[in-house]
Every structure is written in C-alpha cells, then in structure tokens.
Length: 361
Image (cartoon, rainbow, N blue to C red):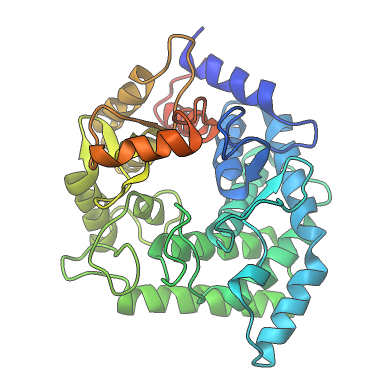
C-alpha cells in the first residue's frame, strides 16, 4: 500500500460518524477532540484525492458546530459593538468533542485561525467538486460575523501560545476565510460589507506592521522572528502571492532559519518535546515550492515526510532526531507521553503535497 493509500485509509477509518476528524486517536491531550484548523487541512487532503463524502461530512459537521453557536456569536458581537469588554475565555473554542460539544478540560481556546481556515477549505472543496455542502449557510454566516468583528483581537496562535499577540499567520487565515465566505455568496449585504472591510483592514495592517526589516512576514506584530505557520500566508491563503517580494522573502526566510534536511521546525524558541521538526510544516514548505514552480524542491519535502512514517505507515506530529532544545523533551514525555502518532493533520498535508506533485494512490 502506498503512503497516499494508507493516509486516505487512516483518515477515513478514524473519521467519526458525526463527520469530525479526531486530531490523533491515542495521544492523551488530543484524544476525542477535533480542531477546525487540523480538520480543514485534512478535509482538503482527502477532497483532492476523491473522498468527496468524507470531506463533505467534515464540512457539514463544522457548519453545524458553528451554526449552533450563532446566538453566542451575535451576543459577543453586540457586546463588543457597545464597547463592553469580552474576555478571551468567552470566545468560541478552538477544539470540540467529536459530538461537537465544548470540551470540559482547560485549553488555550481563543484562536481565530481555525475558523478562517475552515471557510477557506469549504470554498476550495465546494468549487473543486461543483456542489454546495447542504446546510452550511448558517455556519458560514455565523463564522463570517465572528471573524469580521474580532479579527484584530490578540489571540492564541496555531501552536496555542502567546494570547497577548496578534499573529500574522492568524491574520492570513482570517483574510483567506473571509474572502472565501464572500466567494460562497451566502452573506447578506451587511455581512458582506463587514467581511470586505475586515479583508481590507487585515491587508492594510499586515502591510504596515507585519513585515520585518528583512522584507519577510513577522511571527507576530512587533517581532522580527519567523514561524513555520507563516508559510500558509503565501500558499495556500494568498495574503501575499509567491511572486510577491514579501511572499518570496517569507518562504525563503522560513526555509533558511527553520528547515533542516527536509524537516521544518516551528520556530527557533520552540521547546515543545524539545523542538523537533514537524511533518505538516514540511508539507507547507513543499506546497509553496510546488506552486512557485520548483517541483524538485517540493518532492524533497514530500520524500522526507514519507521517510518519517512508522513501519505501519503512520505519520507522527514531529520527529526528535534534531531537537532545538533537547533538554526540554523529557518534561513533555512525562506530561503527555510519546509524540502524537498518527497525527491526521500530518497525513492530510502529505495528501495535499502529493496531490500537488501528481502522486496518487
């Protein structure tokens, strides 16, 4: 069985009957939960390889999850419009149980990027297969209202860190999501106007404050560091095109600082499990190379991802052979056990990059 076939099998076999994709079936901190961010990229991977029903089930689940919280969204938006404080703990969560319920354990929950990423992936799937996801409209509209109202708030980043910052990768995801919501043509006039204003506001803010002196995007506003998640601001989110000087500089700087022999670190101060190389970020870097017309470089990252598979073909979240902070690995092993394997997002990103390079089952 090829790794493409195995990845499809893992994702299809583990998908919940509700449509949710579990982040990882056995990892202690992820078990029983689905993230919109992870799930959106997983759905994009299987959608590209013909699993229309599986991707559609995830998108329908996501739409239900957010649509069921439309009243909460409207209450939050109204409070903010009146100038009342809204605490991060009151915002929508970043992860849900497979049944679509808020989790009971404490988590770093206020994250906006997953909501934008879901809208982006929904639009990709809808346009690719020429069919709307039934019942998605309420969820799309609630998500657009939520993002349009709160896009400029500090929140946790992709890695559930630094709630006090405004992260450029998050802004890129929201920018792409609101553009997708507009393209789906389900927003009413007021919602479309607010979404358009937010899209323009994000682009202006990033242009003014999100580009470092070296010409590349910043990890967050005010920092000159880079982060692997910034790759998504170029491909697939298109905040800056690959041919744009900022887009090209961002991909080049992430690769220069964070890529090692085909694997990609999250950021230089990453101590999570010692700061290993993440497979899904190799997928993003390869994706950027593929779209920029560098297939040989893209294939190098795909091959590295495949080489990290277990004997059974499962892909982990990260590998620990080249750690940035090796002295910090054991504390995470003691806290949560071994690295998440399989991580469905890793398999989803492998499918996306394989699809970009014409590698099929």
